[in-house]
Image (cartoon, rainbow, N blue to C red; front, side, top):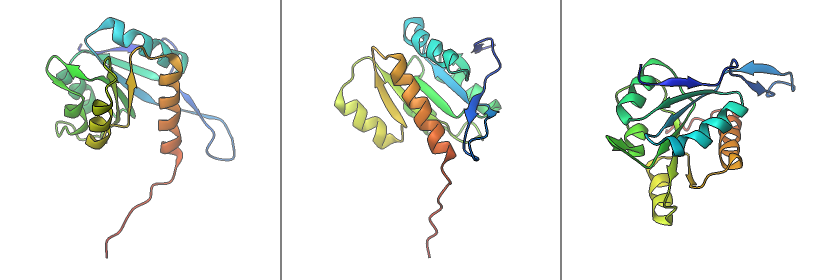
Length: 155
């Protein structure tokens, strides 16, 4: 099995979108990194938020996970042994909705930030990342999910 789920509790995030009635809703996050020291703080923070955290080491494993289930957010290391974050953003190997991809970088160069955002990344976080970096990114993704989708029709 190429991935493991983190956390022991059933994953749910409180949904307060309808008159502030609290109903649990699943929110899956994929963490893609071959380095334990990179993914450990991200997974620990996700566990504290009670979200489903799926972990894998390579692009190929990530695409396998994404082909089998919907993931709302993916934290992906800038470079992987078999590709990069761009491969997840632009992959055609899975049918599910492409998740928002957050690039995890150790360099923190501005050029990478602009390149990642222009390529379609949801956000970029720089090492050392703190719990608040991960929490704010998840909260922002949840808020965007709660916003009504606007479609642009071309006449």
